[in-house]
Amino acid sequence: MLPTPAQLASGIPLGIRTSTLVADTRRQIIDILTGVDRRLLVVCGPCSLHDPNAAIDYAQRLQLIAEVFTDDLLVVMRAYVEKPRTSLGWRGMVADPGLIGTGELRNGLVLARATLLGILREGMPTATEFVDPTVAAYLHDTVCWGAIGARTVESPTHRQLAATLSMPIGFKNRLDGAIPPAINAAVTAGTEDHVLALDSTGTPRNRLAAGNPCPHLVLRGGESGPNYAPSIVTGVAEQMREHGLPALPVVDAAHGNSHKDPGQQQVVLAELAGLIEDPAYPVAGVMIESNIVGGRQDVDPGLPHALVYGQSITDACIGLDDTRPLLTRLAQASLRRHLQIKARARRNQTDRRSTRAAVPSRRGDSTGPDSVGITAVPSCAR
Ligand SMILES: O=C[C@H](O)[C@H](O)COP(=O)(O)O
Ligand SMILES: C=C(OP(=O)(O)O)C(=O)O
Image (cartoon, rainbow, N blue to C red):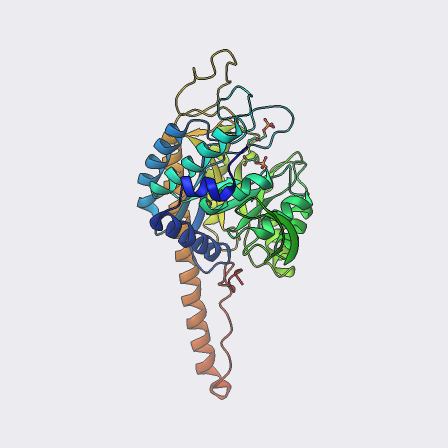
């Protein structure tokens, strides 16, 4: 028998420092997604975690880089312990920690929870994709940002799962590039609903899910091509607002936006940095697939542990040496965007002052909001 979620959590508990980090980061991410916090969210890290030591090592190295940019970036580490596959393939640390397909789920759950906690202990906030709703019951409290991926975005079960989760959830556009299913998912997940869910003792319950506190979109490109062009991103932000979901989208520089090619991912990130400087480009963040060593490798079934340390066994990633300058460039873009918004607000204020001086009878009129691309909107959280 497997442990219940409560049994696993009591063996590998969150401490005060780590649970505070999770709660604070969730709040900060929501503020960024809704334009209250001016920084850029950066979800950055390996495509998947297979080696706990390398994962903690990456977290330590990323933390040292991220702490330099805290004024301009909120860096959250991709800590993906479940992998959705197009067809057959390794399904991640939870399902197959031994990398040989023997399904050691007990070890997988222990290793995944311990690794997520280890990353938090290094001071790095965590991001993951929720693939199996039952697994979510074991890990959700260790996660600051969550994704529902391109392969599951239309699944009612995953939308209901997101409605029960308290971290902001990003919904990816479909593999073929279709965006409306992700908008439908965000609307559904943001709505209160009765769902069948396991409680921490593993007992099935008819639970009233509050709705996700900040459902938003992740534009990951697709078979129809990349989807981070300003016209697409602006359209998505507008549609979300029309649905009463004020969260700005995140752009995934990997996957369909760069054909899983880390060289192309760097090109996309450089382009994104240029776009982000313009306050009219309404994005809250970017996603990067990065690892200690760039590229990818196959697991040899006969020698599953003869692997290059710190290199992906799923999608090819950008190496950390190349990730550092990209984060520097994104921080610069985030700062420039902020300075442009401030300069524009100052110009608007001066214009209003001169209008008032010219038309003294309009005393008492409302000045109205500044006309900048990213304005503070009410928080998603209810
Ligand atoms: O992010 C990782 C992969 O893109 C995802 O798990 C699917 O991979 P696959 O198409 O190789 O199965
Ligand atoms: C599988 C992933 O992404 P997508 O759903 O966009 O393919 C991922 O981010 O690991």
